[in-house]
Length: 582
Ligand code: ASP
Image (tube, rainbow, N blue to C red; front, side, top):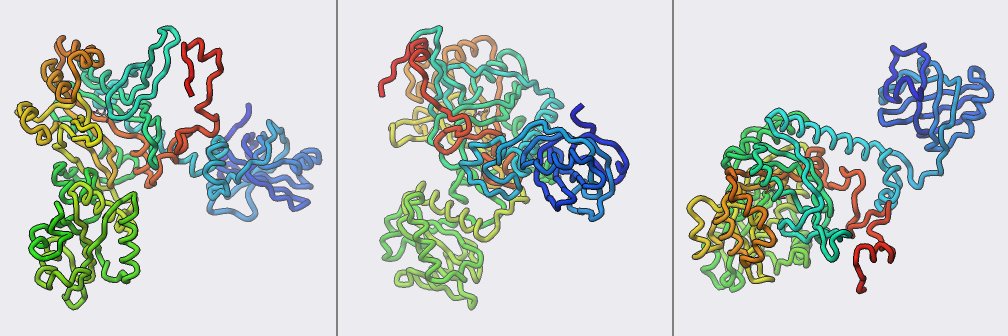
């Protein structure tokens, strides 16, 4: 038996008990006549004591040679500590060691296994198994487990069945590039890894499963913007015989359950906002509504003077930065430079100071008088002491730029409190999205999303106006879930695919299996998928999903620990009928 107790378990009530513990040497303090060792395992740290008088000589000298991260087993007696450590659950006791077995030695770890480590990111990823021994990483993984467990319990209690779907499939159109796997047995043919189990979960509905969920890996070969992973986990769900309202209800229930169970937070009924309103008021389809700073559109009150920049702009829009009038001229210039960086791409910024005496002072005083500026302040809901920041130009670009400014200022002002939770449903997304590069429409969600009732005809006349039965769940400015009510008949699906530019043959080749299934009594159905990694990070009050993934990839999609991806040898390539052309 390696252990009678774990390293986080012993208390004063165990004094005089004979125990066996196993774990890692966290640190050792050698006073010459007495040695203390902190023994660590997943459950905690227990202090071991070896002393010249009470510990057998051989054991004492063995203890002197223990290094950090050695794996040891000890037998001894629980005794009361002379100087107790109130910060440690086991701080009232220590174990007086009588027997010591070294189970394994360890090289000196390349970084300290402490809560605050000296290891840089790459080093910690290379030795992730050592990183996982550290409390912050370990606790995140345990936290993730708790969230996943709560999800499983809740959905199971609501009659959902967890069904696994295959990983070796063919392309699912979620808008990213596929990871592909060559087939050895089918020369020249490839599987694609699922970007999501979308078509399979729909087929499960055709199969009569009624309520499905799966905590499942999805694979998307995208350029890795900060905090994305090429493989990530979804809580993927689908229900039959449902309308949008049923889905929102069910998954609002799940989210509320998680917030209560995991964070002890009660949240009121989730507000809803249309996509159009979200874009107009926040410039973003995933607004963080923990704070105000809503957009004020200023076209009407700014395009009547000689200021050409505004007069020629499609949109003039501003926000009020609370207390922003305290920014110095230099700080405002810095903010303007921040907005002009290529990542954001604003051309400039107009500002209005809302002075304490009720007067206004703007960077465009040459063109606008107090009456104009007062109107701007009313529309942006600016108060005395605020700074109104105004951007202008192409609607979509300006909204994105001002949204970035809004989030940045909210972060700087400490308005994005990690332990405050503000969920929001964004509904009525457009069905299609115009893509400038390819000069055609794409499905904004995916091609299986149904248009709002009665809007199918609009597809021919005014495609960009068609709204979808699609919804996103937003939490604190992050999209944590998204889904839709699906098309469930062949004819509508065919129309949709045609509008997305598929010929009949292409549609049949790629989605024939789904269209065929729709002819065998497909029930009305819809669903949603949550991004588990991000959800866990937000519930954990943190920003980076990597910190909640046991073995994440870096920004170039590499696993630096196992050194993947890696070349194949010629034999393997031959077997797969592949020839490299690089
Ligand atoms: N498959 C979709 C996604 O991955 C979610 C859904 O429509 O249920 O975003």
